[in-house]
Image (cartoon, rainbow, N blue to C red; front, side, top):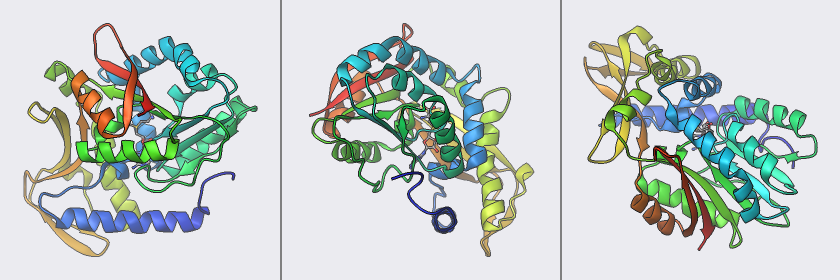
Length: 319
Ligand SMILES: C[S@@+](CC[C@H](N)C(=O)[O-])C[C@H]1O[C@@H](n2cnc3c(N)ncnc32)[C@H](O)[C@@H]1O
């Protein structure tokens, strides 16, 4: 099997239909919400890469440091000849650390919803690792993905605190799904952002350069382009705050005035101050990670953190 799972034109139409249905349902509901996965069109993926470079966004730097220190250990635990399956692979930058450390790695299967970005990333990986079979899968990692045919261990990789975007029951459902996909011999390297000083969390999602705001408001651009929507971007603002009770960053776009917008031929009224939820980023503590792993059918074999305990990388084995 080579390339993405669906022909491009068919897949783009299917993607757009799903996007339209989700947006209409999300704007018709109360409270209003649009699933976070739709933040990632080609521009959204590029903006996320910019976020990773921001001084306030400690997550990428810290996780990359832990992975570069522990890649050898991960390689020894996983053993020779495994296949690496990444969920929400983005630009596959951290994956390179594992690709280079896993002995006799046979196959790398990046799974991502952002089609053009995934294809460009796969092309770069094939150029840089000509010995590696790269099998990009454009799919929602919560749903069915084609079986990864490999005669050896499957090592899953879910970095970037992407698990934090899932509400706890969804995170459990994801882990169970990954557990089935990876099999009884499988393992999963999971990156989790830890609870910490609320100001530090607030700053990470409210950067001075405004890149995170551009990332949120890109969803409005995407609706304008793909759903013939009429959002005036100057009439909405990014809003992110930490909710200490639920241990999560909550992100919205907020209407700055009373206004009406048409989306896919339907009119939606927004009152001044009204918000549409776009994203959560749950933060965990050690007991929360243990409970999550257990609920998903895994046991923690190893947990690595940085000296400031900002971020954790865990090696989970199928229980
Ligand atoms: C927070 S970024 C992490 C990217 C990269 N793994 C990293 O650590 O830098 C989340 C990635 O997951 C992808 N993604 C988000 N929701 C998804 C879903 N439901 N199914 C597949 N991919 C998804 C996005 O396109 C994006 O590339």
